[in-house]
Length: 168
Image (tube, rainbow, N blue to C red):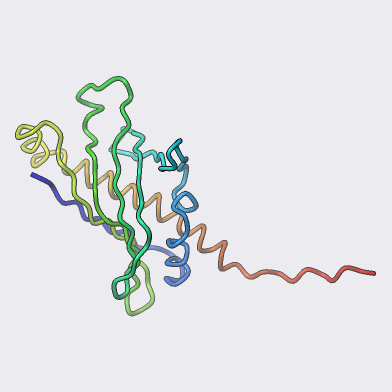
């Protein structure tokens, strides 16, 4: 049975600038993201004290009322050592959004679903303990994305200083 994961992260800065940054290519606002041979992004996600690399696919942005959304899915990369610890991070499908409230504040939203590994036993362990790890992973992902979006939005909205005219 698929589990739901919803996380929220308040963002600093003007919501309109953050939404514009969110509409740019994700490798511009995900810290440390690298493209693979197929053009998908490789991103380090943090699950508690573990760090795993996932292959992320983003859809094009769309808007619903005051929220800009992108679909996203990630799948963990196999590290060769598929011990139980390395299999704790499942594949994930969902949406990532930047919501602007009526006061002009922005919040980053992750609304996703994942299938706990290990069948019925994995679902039981997830219900007892691993869902907290999933929430920590999602929250840390939002924190990292928030840092990147804030940085890009502030670069985009920084006033451009006029250059002195060249002397002839």
